[in-house]
Image (cartoon, rainbow, N blue to C red; front, side, top):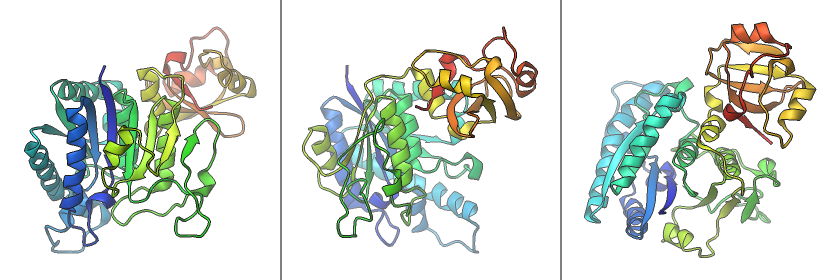
Length: 358
């Protein structure tokens, strides 16, 4: 079976300081992806850069609000971005295709499977999918945190073995990389190592996310059995060196040995689509957090918050207010309220549609 990887390229890698596309860097990264492609590695590219490239093409007639500016610049910039990719891959004898998505496209199982099928058909025909958020129609409540979040969703959806997130620094540091004594975390075990307090929360000038987002995306993907590497996209030959296993300065998240089925992967990445909350008692929380394969039964429920329909995604909250999991509910909120604390009722969240955060 071919190795399948997802490569995420941040806007700060593809943009110069003046906001124009860095064609030299873009060309170098395409050359590396082409080399991997020709060595029988399936690559899905998640690429930022549309808004940044659009800013250099037009000057708005009047001052725009944030959403209108993103819509204008991305609608122009996405054309420019994909045309550049098309030309660069075409020079290598490779065909690429564009997939623009919104967060809503991952909210239902049907849309999720449609996207997976589309990318699978492209890969089967040796086409490189280039994925980006559809900034032209996304609004605040439907926006990904940034393309780091999108890359994690795509990697889980497509069963990728590896997710490489290219940033403008070498990885995750113990402190600001410019401070004396700061060191890079070369390997992180998502199950054991909690380093969130070390992470700088600053964001790039062109992107929406930051290292905190990268850490959270990488941690969750690693828990699902995906190896995640955060590395510097400005290093020469970075992708090829990483795939060949060379000792490149970077941060690697050790993948969990226990795989997760496709439905649970979808559930795990659905936190942004939740419609309500199911509050549970201490006994129910202990059972869910054990190693047993159990469903959430109404007898362990203490409260229902929010309005949701059957098959919607909900958060599961313990008695201390901490989220212990996410699941697809079998009940509407009204029906769920009627079954609170009752025995001999069907599961409110079945095990097959339940993701527990351990």
